[in-house]
Amino acid sequence: MKRVLFSVFIMSLLLGACQSVPPAPVVPPQAKELPQGTQTIPGKPPVSSRIIDITTRNWAFSPANISVKKGEKVTLRLTGESGVHGFAVPELSINKTIRPGETVTVDLPTDAAGSYRFFCSVPCGQGHIDMKGEIKVEE
Ligand SMILES: [Cu+2]
View 1 (tube, rainbow, N blue to C red):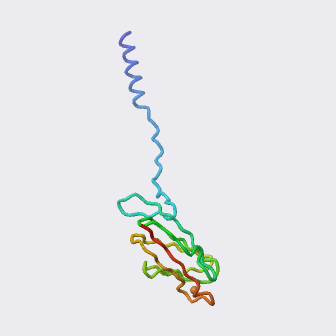
View 2 (view 1 turned 180 degrees about the vertical axis):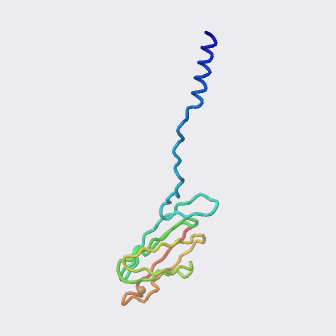
């Protein structure tokens, strides 16, 4: 009788061991979508940057005065409302053209404190000369 019980015990162990456990569904790792304005540096975790929205229209930038902190990660998001305009910051090697309905992003270098003038670099009509502004990078 003991033998029978022992056999049943062994059989139940074997059956239990053979029971297949359904494998956990493997979800393919998908490229995580990073929020807009996120900058990635190889080997470093992504850093979110502050997005500053600027609209371009006949004949103004809005806002025309921008303040950022030195070393801050900043992305300018330029959206065209009317007219074709340029956004030029020669000291920061930035020169972009923005058309109506178009959005152009540009990472703003903030490694050096100072005041940087920007202006429209596309001849756009009578108010062209008034299209200017200033970026302040503060310590
Ligand atoms: Cu212009």
